[in-house]
Image 1 (cartoon, rainbow, N blue to C red):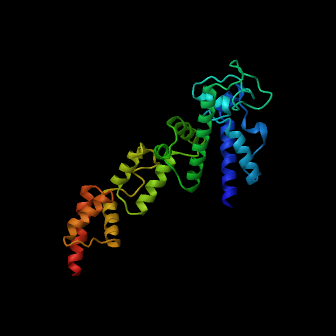
Image 2 (cartoon, rainbow, N blue to C red):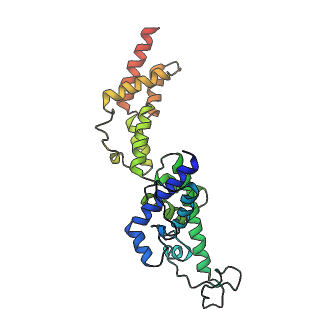
Image 3 (cartoon, one colour):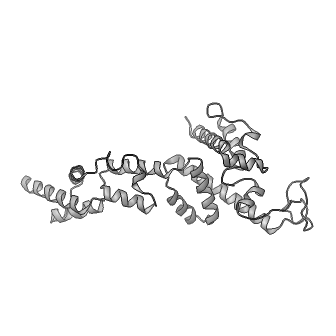
Amino acid sequence: MSDAEVKARLRAQIAAIEGSSPACKDSASHGAVGPYRDAEVSEGSCTPDEGAGAFRRASRSSCTGIRASRDAVDRFGREVPGFSQEGDGLGAAAGSPADSSGGRVPLTARTGASAADEAERAFRKIERLALAREQASAALRARLAREGFAPEAADAAVDRALSCGLVDDARYAEVLVRSRLSQGRGAQGIAAELDALGIDASVVPGWPEEFAVDHESEVERALALLDRKPPRAKNRRDAAFRCLVQKGFGASVASTAARVWSEGEERQC
């Protein structure tokens, strides 16, 4: 399956999730266009172009309020009078009602539309990142902030990604735990890495009982790590201890493994 087909299917799934949630039904009753008003999209039948087009239309009525200009403005607490084609060229299409200020689009309306566009761009950024690998919500907020997105836009985009399942911190945590363990990392360091992202390791199903993170298993994993990447310092035991601590092993595990490994190295000499 090509990247375009994967993205189209993903967008169709998001549109279906957003369209079936109570929040979206509520927004539809207030005049928002529902995901399936413009096009019917299903996971098994949409083409890349049809899926992308339907998702773009559906995203204007998302559950998190990233909708067409009027609804997005409401998301950020601003009231939007009617648009006019006249004035300073920032009006809506012909036929839309003029506002009471003589045809000029109020600053709040222009600001609201801009906020909606920024939130939509932020969501597209999240979508591209999530297609590559699992993402943590806190890390996404920090990345969007670094790239210049306003806090409100970043929050709206991340909340939307969480609500439709594109981002899931529990799912991210499980992937990270399994990945770090396969790399030979220690449980203490893994838990600290999750904690830095605002995720409790307990959200991972079966943690820690169903994972090899007891003292004996940790020592075995630490020894395997030292065998793969042995320290080259003169005092091997101290170097091994420091290496293991840096890899996330607790002091007790690191001390035991460093002693066992260094004694084995000495016997071989």
